[in-house]
Length: 227
Ligand SMILES: *Cc1c(COP(=O)(O)O)cnc(C)c1O
Image (cartoon, rainbow, N blue to C red; front, top):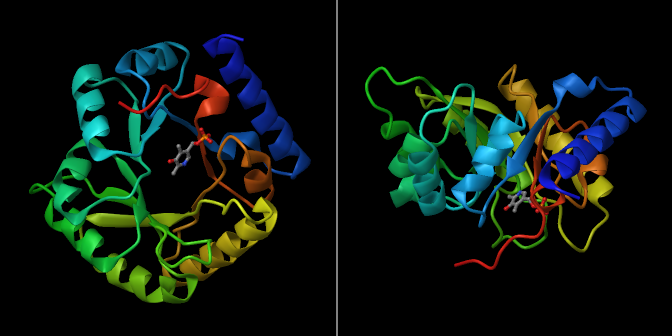
């Protein structure tokens, strides 16, 4: 299958899963994760109508934004772990940051705003694994992080993000993310986005209420080795 057919195939599976879950497919944003692929792939995807792309490394994101330049309606999502000292570069390149998991990172993104800058949409990444060393705030600490980030004037908290662990059924991990989402929405009304679901588990994520899917290889094909 070529790129266009893989994209159409994934979109059909998303629509089927949404309808099976009693949801409207149009309320789901499909982000194509383009990491490790050349910027030319984003050009091809854009020509096919893709308007949301995701990158997980700041340097790669910055380079691709420079190569691709401004494109009508194209939204860059940053989905990887961010170092505090890269916050300014992340903010300059991305419109949505999915991986805010600590106050210091939120503060660094907040102070990186230029005067009069549009607010930056952020999601709070929740750790769904039992390994505290993985990215994401522990679910028990989500509320205090949310209150802190809500106090950052140039950030707009939109919801939660999670990655299902490899050693657990995705459905049960996403059910916990859904509970975190409900908790966040009680603290910040309107912060209802749920970024969840990758190539292997986007159907389960849609069942659990995901609003933003981050899908890479099912659409792009296998990733080239990291350079
Ligand atoms: C790479 C990546 C994805 C996409 O993974 P696929 O399995 O290729 O769909 C999604 N989310 C994050 C955080 C990633 O780093």
